[in-house]
Length: 316
Figure 1 (cartoon, one colour):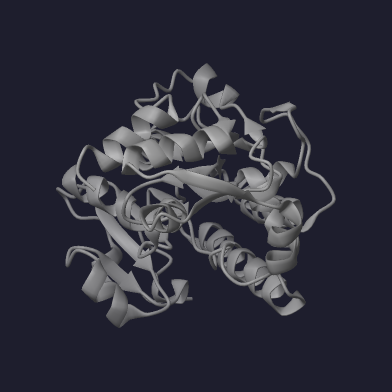
Figure 2 (cartoon, helix red, strand yellow; figure 1 turned 180 degrees about the horizontal axis):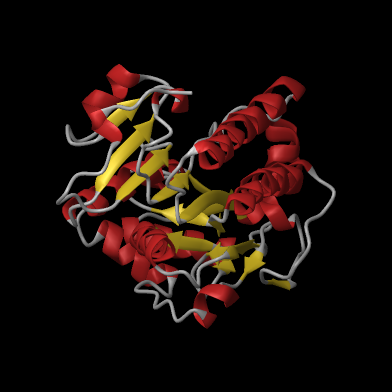
């Protein structure tokens, strides 16, 4: 067991203390800022402390292993976002193992921490994705839709199951199944926009498949509410209420960047280059945020048109 350290014990005037894994990643770095602004304390589990020191506020405590945290540490909640990015190289057998291990191993360590802490965290917000549902064509998907027998479903399902084990310690567990996050400074959008900027914008597949998305600001607001509101529990779709077809999204993206969208890339070409990972681009999912709406979450960006205008404005 780790020995006590004053760095991780509660102070008389400190705000709440959160442990964040994946704090230097795209979503994590966006989450840290508002938490610090409201006076909360932050502990970041990172693989590269030097890189984290460059990227994170000096007020954030950095640890390389959860073993550095003593049993007496006061942690009010945990946000578990760590995991190797799913986009990138094709899903070879070795990469599938890395994608799974990068999520499951960290999550099991987080659950073990919850078990040994004397002051139990109130909540664990765990990352997940709408890939959980697999492929459903035009069918409308909500949190009751079951997973399918494919890698992306298994990846998300096992990740969520690992996190659910924390409930045995009395920790409230919520898993946010995130869609494509729209932001100008990270995630999928800059990669989608790059060829459009260079007059090489093409739609993958037929373009009739669905894109379920969320603006980064709405995602961060949902994460903050999930930390604070005890009604946020179980699976919650982090997607905007109005998914749209890929061809319509690319049309809006072309308008936002004042560029034409020239053509479609046949699905067979995408599959040849990406293998099973191509499902993320050419199959699509029509997801609605039923639980978030039941909880009264108010989206600021309900349409992709509004989200893209907010990101790109009029200057490109």
